[in-house]
Image (cartoon, rainbow, N blue to C red; front, side):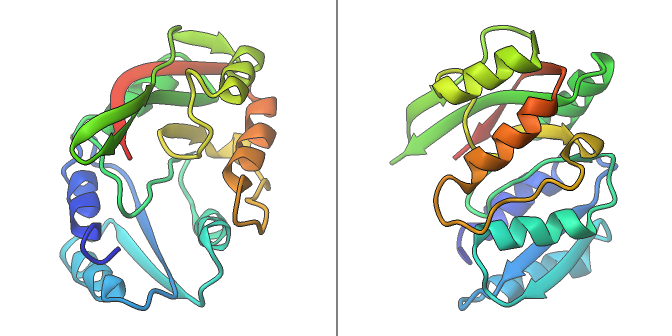
Length: 190
């Protein structure tokens, strides 16, 4: 991850929406990722850096949830990128529509080419319809990324300590509580 991390962090720090806190959780990395995170944290006061023993992706995300103080929460994996309007688009969409969750397009890039895309066809949907789209894996991706959640909706929900489908279980629990989900036109790149 050490090589991909700067590209990810640069995409976040270039956001047009700048009123955010970036929690970086080092999950016991064995490469130079922590040094990269330290350098970025020194350069930008919005970054809070945490180091923990390796426990896997669920443990790292749960650590972030435990210390998060924001009204809204989004997740980003260290090897992914977002365009500079990512946060502003999600934030504007969720607040303007008083929604519980905002989702956006997801592009899976393999060898420089788009291999697959998730794109929600409706701009405003009920939580039930969103859950159906999430389960069908056709219009809303099953992972926690490419979404902005109202923190209050997440509440005490956490990722189960599993190595597969932990993200789907988390999303199922949170989407079940959502009344309104909105789709906005920005993109998350895996």
